Length: 356
Image (tube, rainbow, N blue to C red; front, side, top):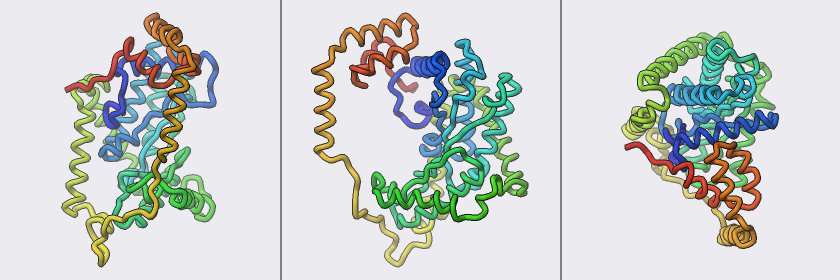
């Protein structure tokens, strides 16, 4: 869902991709797989594409409920798959991000309990936070660690289940070893040195947090109404509602950034005496030519020494016969490359085409 709405890395038709997701979850249930999550219901890439905190949360939760409805339509038990879902949010520096987790858990728990009759474990929303890559800037990149620290505090005070802190140089390059250590140190210092984090829920009872929780919940529910008026998530996607909304919010943010109405220190205000030019990194991490050639050599050898025609045909036949595709892929992937499997499934599942 979010690939169509935000990230642009769809390869299969939406309907076929949804079936693949259902097959993964069905395989997990049939084989009692409980130490992996079947899906990460992601809002991070919606936010990175330009959505504000409300839109990120509303679109992500509505996508999650769409998966729930689809799994239920295939006869799966809500308590068999409910605990196996996880969420992934971005944490920017806007105040709404301080309550994104508690609002998500509140809405999810109510819906799972009262609408779907789910048990206690399925009502518990589990989510990962990654600090905002979009908030990092190539000008005065040392300041990025400060932004990431504040975003990490939001996440930890809001009781996220896991956290990724971005490296300060991600605005320019794949993180270097030194920058990754600095990013990791942000988490370690907060967890090990900051006294207030010894308390599990330090902001509980705060007027601003409680008020924000109510306001954000109300705004998310209003967005649900707008999506339902357009025929639900699928119906809204047909008219590119989510995509257009994200683009409009991205344009609004960029406008505020460029005209200075939204101050970003060292980027559009409080510049250094040198004008805060873009920093050129001392080290840029890229794959070496040797690494590229080794990967292509490995792929060529796989193609030469593996007889895959029968396996790929069997994969296509299983797909047409409505068998579990993921179960078939578990065997086919032992001898076939990702490209071979993808091309075989294109013929029976259809490639992605954006609505215009």
